[in-house]
Length: 300
Ligand SMILES: [Cu+2]
Image (cartoon, rainbow, N blue to C red; front, side, top):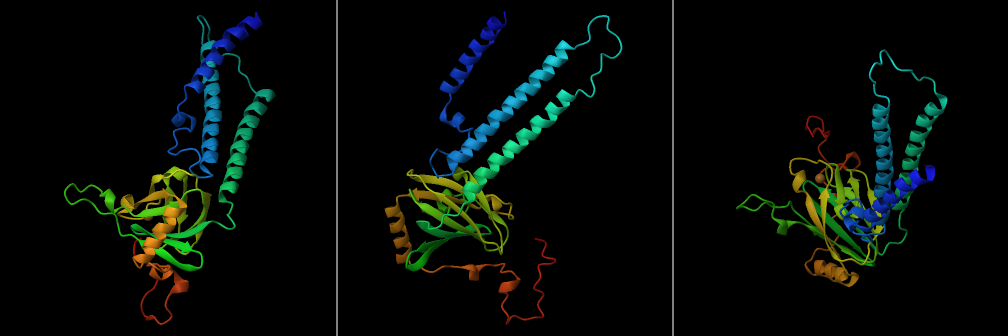
């Protein structure tokens, strides 16, 4: 009897699971995250953490909802019943169960998140390419380091709107060029207020804070293409148009792009001397001391 019932449940369940997995599109397999496997050395790991978490949470949710519905139906008030049903209290096995299981879940999520975060944040000692990105209201500066040569740079202004429609003019988006199949270190800085550097398909964003230097490290895959980037920290009136493109090109094209910047005269580091919020340690000692140098009352 028991075997038969198990088979009755197990067979259709196996069919459903097999069909669900076989029919999964790539978008479903990666939990609808906007990326492609292998785009960087981190995206597969991030997709794995995301989809596994969802599977565990859905299992918890289905079990909990199932038990709630079952309890409501099985222990409903029958005809002729009055008063309270038998009350269950201090049921130790059950209390231990609903204390331990959530603890295991939280500890598990924490452990896997901490493990993946540690791997993603691990610095690359000798990256193939290094660059610095400055966030500024409301654009981006890109400084490309070169071995044994002065860096070259690309300085953007704010994205423009089309005069006819008022819509954003995509042709004025700044473009960050990155080489494929390379290890890359990006140093993140802010020229004024808090911004956040987000390449959507990298499934990764990191704060750009005035006076703080952050880093991100990754290896690109061999896929070329254009990706969307944006500021992910509300930074003022035109935050929403603080967008950029990331163009993934072969290392040869990357070198040629840097060469082109040099020929246009964009040589030099455009460093923190261009910052508009320099912080106390950088204040020019010759400046007029009678001027209030604090930010108080600026309403930022
Ligand atoms: Cu911003």
